Each structure stands twice: as C-alpha cells, then as structure tokens.
Image (cartoon, rainbow, N blue to C red; front, side, top):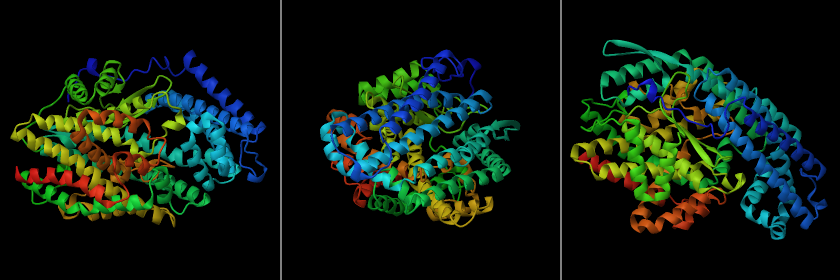
Length: 603
C-alpha cells in the first residue's frame, strides 16, 4: 500500500533508553557487566558449579545459597534481555546501522559471560538435584522455582565440561551466531527489480514477498520470478550460512551426548516423542484434504494446477484494504469482545507505538514480537501492506504481547516458555479476528475470508511439515559433509513434493524456501517449525472450549498463559482435559479446518 512519509510509523523505545550511546543505557550496560562479574565471584566463592554430590550437605545454608544464585541469574537475564531487545530494535530495522551492529557484537560477548554463569548454575543444580525436594522445602523462593530447578537438573546431564561449554559459547560468536547474522544481513539488504504494469521498481525482499497477496496475477508472478532470481544471486553465502549453523548445532549435540538434534528440540519444547509423533501423523493425514482445497483454488483462478505464485492469491470479491488506523480499530474492537484486558493491551500497543509498521530498505522481513522486561512491555515488528493477512499478522504478534502481559511480575526463569506453547496466544488472537470478520460477511466476502483462513491453515500444516522434513534431512546429511546450494534446493523440492504433492504445479515449487526462513538459521534452536503447528491446533482446541464455556473460559486461559514457563506441555494442557500425547486431539482440531475446507468447496 502507498504511504506518505508522515505515515512511516516506527516503534518507540524512548521510555526504555534514549539511544544506543546515552547515559541511561550506558548505566544499565555497566550494571549488567558488574552484576555478571559479582555473580561469577559469588558462584566461585560458594561452589556454585558441578561437584561431587556426596560432598553436598542439603541443609538450609545450601538452600539459601542456591536461592541467591537463582536470584542473581534472574536479574542478569532480565537486564540482558532488555538491552538485547533495545539494540535489536535498531539492528532489525536497519541492517546498515553500523553502531547497532557494533553494539550487537559487544552485547554478544556479554552474553557469553552470562552463558558461562548459566552453565555453572546448571552444573550445581545437577549436583544437588537428588536433594531438590528437601532444599525446596527449606526455602520458599526455591519452591516457587521448583519447575525450573527440576528441568535444569534433568538437562544438566547434557552439559559438557565447564571448560568446553565456555569455549563453545565463545566460538559461537565466530561460528553459528556469525553465520546466523550473515543470513539476516544478506536477506534484509537483498533487492530485486520488479516490473508491474510497465513500471520497474527496485524493491527490498520483504516488499517483494508481500506482493504474493496482490489481487493481480501478473504482479504475483512477476514478484515470484524476481524473488527466485534474487535468492539465486545470494545462494552461495546463504548455503555457507546454513551449513555453518547446522554444523554448529550437530557438533554441540554430539559433544553433549544428545541422541539427535530432534531429541534436543523435543526437550526444549517440553514435549515427548509420543506427542511429537502424534502431531506429525495427524498433520500428514490431512494432506489430502488440503490438496482438495489447492485444486479448488486453482480452478477458481483458471488453472489446472495451482502455481506457487497463486498460493496466497486472494479469492472472492472482498478486496478490502486497511489503513493502519483501520487495522488498529478492527483489532481492538474484536479483542475487546473477548476480554477488556486483551483489547486494552492492543490499544496501549497502538497508542504507545510498540509496533514498527511498514517495510523499508534494511528492515527484516516477516514479523516478530519481543519482550522488554525492564518496562514490562513488548515491541512488534511487521511489514504492513494494507491486506487482511497483515491485519492477522498484527493480531498474531499482539497475542505474543498479551502472553508477555499475563506473565508480568514473574521472574525470567518462571517466564521461560517453550516454542510449542509460545504460539498459543498468537494463534488464538488470529482466530478471534478471523471469526469476527466471518461473522458479518456476505457470501462473496465469506469466500474471501475462508480463503484467508485456509491460506494460513495450509501454511501451518502443509508448509510447516515440509519445513520439518527439509530440516530433518539436512541434519541427517550435514552430519556427513557440507551441502551445496543445489543440495539444499533438491531437499527442499523433495519436501514440498511430499507435502504439497499434486495439490500444486510441481514446476513452480519454491526451491529457495530454505533461504527465506530465518528459522533455519538459529544456531541452538533447531526445528522451529512444528511448534507453529502445535500452537495452531492447540489454539483451535482452546477456541472450541471458549465457544462452549464463554466468559468462564477467560480466567483459565489467562492462568494458562501465565503458567507456560512452569509446566511440561502435557501437564499444562491437562488443565483443559486435553491429551496432546494422543493423535485424537490433533485430528479433532484438524476437523475444524476440514469444516472450513468443506464450506470453501461448496461456495
């Protein structure tokens, strides 16, 4: 959408710090450095490190010592997360900003020192682990952090020696993290000429990808072709980046005694293999119904098989475009219908400029929400273009912000939410907005909205499954040798064939999706794909309960969001009588999507 310079709404973090080199930021920066230094001395002086369990006396003094160590860690994480969010607010919106890049590098070194503290504390928790029940009974603060301590005890068995962990953290700056930053810089600065209606414009990648939602097929196809060429021009550095990140991940998992990178992912997501298999099996069983949707969409667009550039094409007569102000009002009004707390959070985010709104050169594509714990706020990046899809994106990210809001007052370790549950509120908020739009739609508008709904569902089930298959094969093969850009393209095409199948024209598959998704480039965060499907289907299941229980549901929902850092996923979902270890729950949620597809096929 066209916008004036005056409409270029950027996020405001002036209530956090006034700038990257101002006195208020320097003060907190120095405070963090001194805190980590003093915590390190306390850890060394008091034996907060891996030791001999037989020499540990599980008494009140030991409990108090552990509680103070956890308190120091929480304070350091809070300050680091705040500074990191502030610096990233500049770096993610302007990759040309040299000062932001410098501060990012400096902060990463502080992050290494913080990581070393975490290793020492986790090692100590591993040592006292057999006596945790007794220690928690002796100290109230430990009891409040019981889940964190038990999880740290369980995960401590996968620690390398402190020396190796320290070296790994330092090497990551020049290894996995460096390769991750390379992908971010290359993708945010990548531009390509796109010709629309005879006029050629050199566009940043985020803007090009947004054209996939254009109502004009020529525009969509031109954008797709320009995008493929652009990624092709950057394929070698991006292939090097992906090799570096995945090699980093594999090496550390081997050294830490992990069975596989998948094993680490399951632990980080607080689910077991049974739950994971049930989810993936249910997803795979739904491919045929999604292929029916793809074929019907192709026929509506006059195609025999759906082309990739038509995946996100609007269908139906509703071509409403939203101004940013209209999007804000639509979201707030419908969030208020769910709860005043949710609506109030959204209104505050819009009013106080928590959102960086429009695409621009040097700004990252996609969208995300990050917490700013010092001020108990969040900040959101999106690339708004006036489409209803982007309204949904804003709602999605505000769901994350609401999740953060529900966790106010908790310590950082109590807030630590797995990716599976991190998507719960975001998907739920998307559902609120979609259902609100459907409620007042006429037949033509209903088709358009169902289309939007099914585009999202197909991405969260079919595309997410393709990403999982891609990443799994990459890990399997990367363990033996580096992979070429051609290898990555071949694996991606294979994954898309296994999931999209005959639903799409295979000649138009997007072989460079491995270059697009930054989720592949997170050094110690593998398989950031299936958690989206988990969140989507879990969110649908929760929404069904809300429709049944009405306002009685809201307090329980808020409590669930507040508790996501303090339970295993299966234990938390049991509060709603949901058994995520069984395929039935996932299939029941997919039946909701089937109902939408059936309706789409009839219209």
